[in-house]
Image (cartoon, rainbow, N blue to C red; front, top):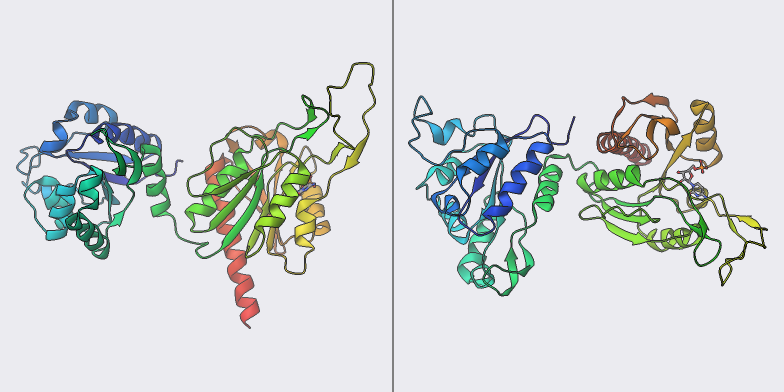
Length: 400
Ligand code: C5P
C-alpha cells in the first residue's frame, strides 16, 4: 500500500527543457503506486521520446487526437475517464495560455477542456516569459478557473539566466500531488513535534545516544503537513531530509530540544513527542577528550519534555509515543496516564525501531485501538486521522 495506490494519473508533457524531469516524475509516481498515462505534445516529443515514457510508465503513450488505437475515436474523452487528476509537467507558457482561453488544438488541451477531474499544472519557462504580464494574467486566470498551480521555483535556467520559472523537482511535484489528495483534516492547526534521538555530549567526540532513526517522527510530520497543518519539527540528529513544507529545527541534546519546543509552542494546537529523548545526560560535558584513565561518568536526569508541555496551563493537545520491549498495554497506558496525555501511540521496539514498517496501538480515553502493520507513512496517516477525530470531539465538547 503506497500513497498513490489505485490512483490513475494522466501526465501531460509539453515542450520545455524540463521535459527530461518528467521522465523521473513518471518513475516516482509509479513507485508511489499510481497508474500513469503520459500524453506527450508535439513539442514535448522534441525533448524526450515516447519510448522513454512508455518504458517508465508501463503504459502506451498518447500524442494524437486521431489515434486509431482508441476504438471509438474518442481519445479526448476516453483517456481521462476514471482519472483522478491530469498533471501537466512541464507546463509551458504556451499551453497555459491555451488552457486559459479554452483552445483545444491537440490531444492534451482537448483532454483538459473535456475533463471532469482536477488539473495540476507545473509551470516551466524562462524568467522573462514567467514575468510577462500575459503570463501573469494567464496564471491568475488558470487558478481562478480551478486548476492548481504548483511552483515554479527560482534558480538556474536552461537559458543560462537565473530567476523565477524553474519547474519544481520531481520529488517536490510528487509530494504536492500526494498532499493534493489528502483530506485537510488539520487545516488551520499548528503542530509542534519532536523526532529522532538526542545526543548527550560526554566530551567533544563522545556522547550518549540511541538507535532511533527518526523515520516515524518524520513520516508523521509529513502526514500532518499533508493534512494541512503548519508543522514545526524539532529534530535530534538523524540525517533524514526535512519533509517538504515542514519547518525543521535541528538540535542535539535534550536540553536544546526542550528550549526549541518551548520557543515553538506559542499558537500550537497540538504537541507530539516522538523523539527518543535520552533519560540521562552527563552532569557536565568535558571540554577536552576524556582520557582512558578517568572512567567515571556522573549522570543527571533530563527533563521530560512531553510531561512538561502537557502540564502547562495553556497545554496544546498532547500526543506521546511509547516504544516498549514487552507488556506494551500496561506500560503504554501507564505512561499516558502518568503524563496526562489524551492520546499515546504504543509499539513494541521489535516491531518498529529503525525499520520502514511499524505496527502500533493507539491509546486514548476510550481504550486501545490496534492498527495493522504497515509502512510508517501509512501508520502516520492513521495517527493523523485518529488525532483529528479526537480534536474534533474535543471541539464539540468545548462548544457545548
Ligand atoms: O521515554 P518514555 O518512554 O517515557 O517516552 C514516552 C514519551 O515521552 C515519548 O513521546 C517521548 O518523546 C516523550 N519524552 C520526552 N522527554 C523525555 C522522555 C520522553 O518528551 N525526557
